[in-house]
Length: 478
Image 1 (spheres, helix red, strand yellow):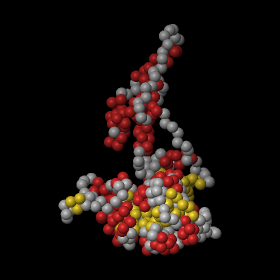
Image 2 (cartoon, rainbow, N blue to C red):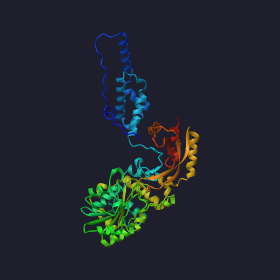
Image 3 (cartoon, one colour):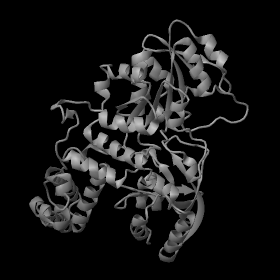
Image 4 (cartoon, rainbow, N blue to C red):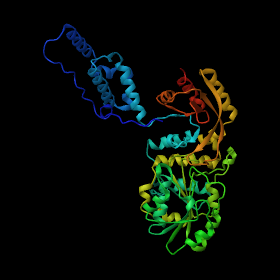
């Protein structure tokens, strides 16, 4: 990808004041006079702002961008045309529409994901289930009982409904919800480890997305980090020797986006739980990805589930809502009732709470797990798509798009999950693809994002829905 260039001030936020060409007084040749007169005539023939605003193709943008934004872009293009003596006046409407389409792309819009990364963080991670979106829309457009007990006629709990589902699905005693998994870790550290020590394996001091590092988060929360073991090996005795009267937590972290293989040793969760019980110290795990179903049913192995962590006796488990769970962005904490009660009593919780839309999305997503209809979630529907179905779709592309080839490729989960795992897939391959093709596809409506390898463009059909095929085929036409 090319580096983002700075946009001149005059092109977006404020209308430009384009200087008119200065005409020097004095005698001129006839040719010069004719040239100036022609130029002036061209500028005079430029349409007025109000006429351009009434043009059908331009007026259509008002409902999306607002009249003032559209008017600003019209003035920008007109100003440029006047500055250039009206030479580009014949393409005014095309130029204005191109500018308005660019404004649309600067906002939050849907894209076609042809990367083959199912949980692409830059593209919004897990797509939501249609039923979940419908439920959220119904609640968002009216009032709801988010914190109202209809039976008692008094204030109720924001978390009661989602909490009951989480307890049922995970087997934990209690649960709590915040706005993302980093916030869940923040709340846990602030509650149990402020001005105290947290013991962590050196091999689990990870850096998460956006360059945030676990040690920095601990420091920000006022906790003292105590590292034990080495990058590749750690034992129970390392944790035991590090215990002190200031120990607040024993902490485990998910290895996001990487794996350690070979000459390695780690402390099994159950062994760490046993040590915590003997020492009277809570054991917490940032599980991260939040798998609520065994992925072996989809041909993937090695991802520990939340239920397994609960069964192993972890006191608190934190995980994300928008990764393997397949729901909205949220940080979920499940665990022992007494500890969750302490989290709920922390005043910081109010700053981290979620709104009614997130709650509605998450509740509806969790109901899929309660009924075990997993393929209602787009993530699992993509994982469950037979390879032969993708091959047939790739063949259809080849029949309709000049130069297209069907390529056997590997998709991946993304989102920090199972970095070693790959999923067989088919992609549409365009040989000798230049960077201009990828740029053109990203400028398409809707934008189409693929990947370029060795000068070839690949559009992985596992992450492109069948309903999007027509759009992609049309965009690939020469």
